[in-house]
Image (cartoon, rainbow, N blue to C red; front, side, top):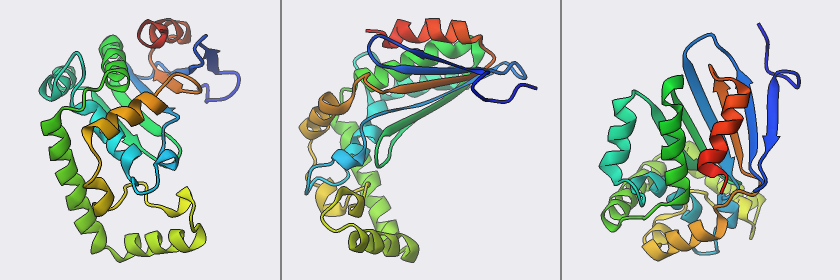
Length: 214
C-alpha cells in the first residue's frame, strides 16, 4: 500500500492560482473531493458577524443553473454527497461519489461556488434555521463558555467574535450583503482542491480546469 506523502501526492497549480492535490487509491470505485476557498469569518465586517458562514451555507440554495430542489435531486440520483460550510479562515467543501460521477460533482461544486443566486425564499428559510441554532447554543453551557472565553482572550479582534454570528447580526444581513461578500472573497487565488480515490492523478488534473480553469 502506498500511503499519502510527497512521493504519492501529485501537486499542480493552475494559471489562475488554484492548487490541485491528487492522490490515487484504487481500493474502491469511489472518489473524495475536499478543499477550500479563502473566504472565512475573519473577513466578517464589525456588526455583521456570521456573514461568511451565512454566505457559505447559502451557496447550495440555488444557482444560475439549478434551483434548490434540482441540486439535491442531482446528488440523490447518483447517491453522492456535497457540502459547503464556513470556518474562521476559509469556506470548506467536501464531496463523495463514484468515480463515474466525478464530472457531475465537479460541475455542481463549481456551480455553487461560482454562480449562487441567493434566492429570497431559501435565504429566509436558512435564516430561520440559523436562529434556531442560536436558541440551542444559548442552552449549551460549553458553547456559551467558549464564546465568552474567546471574547476575553481576543478583545476587538476577529478571533474573539463568533463565526456563526448572533441573532442581532444575522437578522440584519440581506440578500445583497451575501452577494457582495461572495463577489468580494470568492475566487481562485490560493483555492485548494484535493481529489483522492480511484482516478489517475493526471486525469484529475485534466478535469478540474474544465470547470474551474477560467
